[in-house]
Length: 101
Image 1 (cartoon, one colour):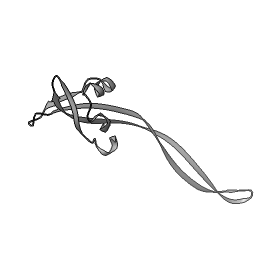
Image 2 (cartoon, helix red, strand yellow):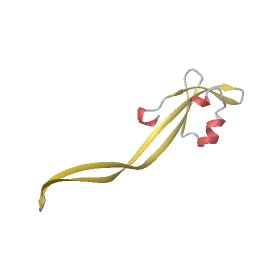
Image 3 (cartoon, helix red, strand yellow):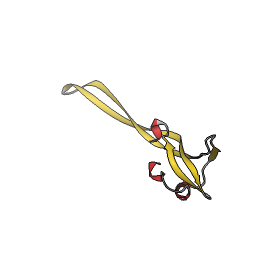
C-alpha cells in the first residue's frame, strides 16, 4: 500500500475496485478500506516410526504422511487521503495485521 502514497485514490480503485468502507475522519481526512480474502490449503506433515522384526532381525520403519488443511483469511487495508479539489490524494496508510503483510 505504500506505493499509493502521493497518488490519487483512483489508483488503488483501479487495482482493487471500490473500497469496502469509506470514513470521514475528524481532521478532514478520509479513510478508504479494502477487505481482501485469501484461502487455500496448507500441507501439514506428520512422521511416525515403528520397530519391526523380520528375517534379517530388527529394523526401524519410518513413515511420513501429508495432510492438507484448508485455511481462509480476511485482511483489511486502509489508505488515508486528503482532499485535492475533486480528488483524494493518498497521504498515508495503516499496516494490516501481521499475517496480512
